[in-house]
Each structure stands twice: as C-alpha cells, then as structure tokens.
Figure 1 (tube, rainbow, N blue to C red):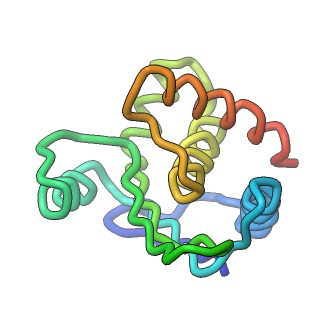
Figure 2 (spheres, one colour):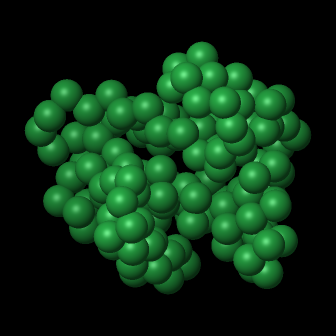
Length: 138
C-alpha cells in the first residue's frame, strides 16, 4: 500500500492513483513487491529537523528515506520529500516542478530497492535508473 501525507506544506495536485501504479510497476520491474510505503511531502524546516534528529546531519536535503525492509521481496519504508527543495531544484535545473517531484519520488523508491548514491559511480547508476523509470509514468 502506498500512502501520501503532507506535513508543514499545503497539499498540491498529485495524481495519487497514477503515481501508485507507476511506483508499483517500478518495484515489480526490480523483482520486488510493495509493502507499506509512505511518501511524506514536507517543508525544508521539517526535513532539516529530521535530518538533524535522526541522521545527525545539519543541512537541507531534498529526500530522506527510512528503510523498514526486513529482507525478502517486499519493500517498506517512509520517504520524506522537501517540497521547498523540489521547487528550488526544478528552477535550477529548468524543469517543471512535476518532473522534478517525480524524479525525487522514484529516487526515494530506488533507495528502498537497495540503490545507493554515496559514490560518483553509484550516483551515475542511480540517475540512469531514474531516467529509465521516469518515462514509465503515463
């Protein structure tokens, strides 16, 4: 089950059904199934506090993923996304808010699927996966 929440930000148009179907297909193409997945849209300040409290990082970020997988084929977790960062990224990259939001959503899901972005090579591989899965959102 994929759920969407809004914390410290106003709700905005989002085709929840379309995004759920898309993410389910991404997960299935990776050979897994969706368990309990929460996507929480929040403000910079909300995510900064989480980054400080849980990860001991004192900087803004666009996404934080909490992985609750216990092995096996089912992925579960929470994905927190700063809408402020998504807006700024979209502006910087000269893409639409919607396109950048979908990129960050799939990025969080890829983390739950076991992908990392710590090294340069991992970031490149993850970006390739994002670019592969983004066109599947129809």
